[in-house]
Image 1 (cartoon, rainbow, N blue to C red):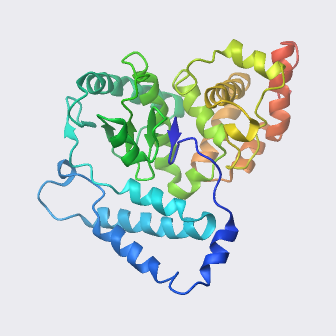
Image 2: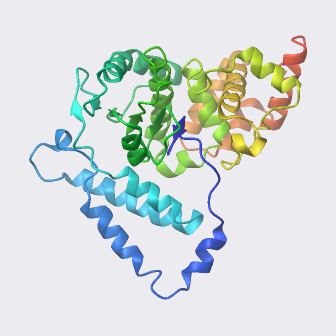
Image 3: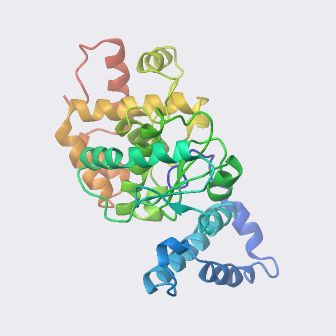
Length: 327
């Protein structure tokens, strides 16, 4: 899966793109029109707002997304602007379901029922794992077609997607069976839980191995289906492995790994960090969600850099007698 706050994707456009376009005639002139479009387009559907005009806090949220878009263009290029525009699309065709947090397009009642049934347990699981309640509304949208899912997420391969507007979309892809949906929903809710505390910009800055590994770990393998821990361990021993760092730009493709293998290896590393020192893991997670820089959060908690911790994890896969990191 994952994110527009949490969806697997490639690295950003080069910064040279902005520098090369900044001086062109009329380039800056497009920005005010883009901001105006964001401010005039509603982020929510009629079932969110009834017949009353948009509330001030919704206007503020739209404006914040617009500011985020302009900052992203300056750093990463116009692909980010398209992502924001996608996140602002109307969801008026999604109707309420048996769960007030779930909305669905007509035409896929089986997927809708499975999603609504999965939400209560998934929320409890995420809140228990991450040590706190959701502080923003949970809004999950079940798409009836792949075209619709792509329209709202700019993705057609992922099973679920948490957008920068903090909405979760569920894909109708055939792999999203009723048996798989609880893990998909839990995976996406993990992304949402982190995003609610960090905000848009800081969430996007987290390393992909951490964001996706945490979501796969909490969901019991959501996003890593088809790759068992034994499979992932065998690939690590064979040298087909990720090398976690602090950059957000390192994704599965950076290491030549399939996405599901990347997610599984990252989830195993997250599980190792938690199992070997639960207190350090709580300190690490609390520090990250409070907005402390990721590298500082990790190294303060584990008294080692992430490369050293990964090396200890790999060593234990080969010999369980090897002491864990920090010991």
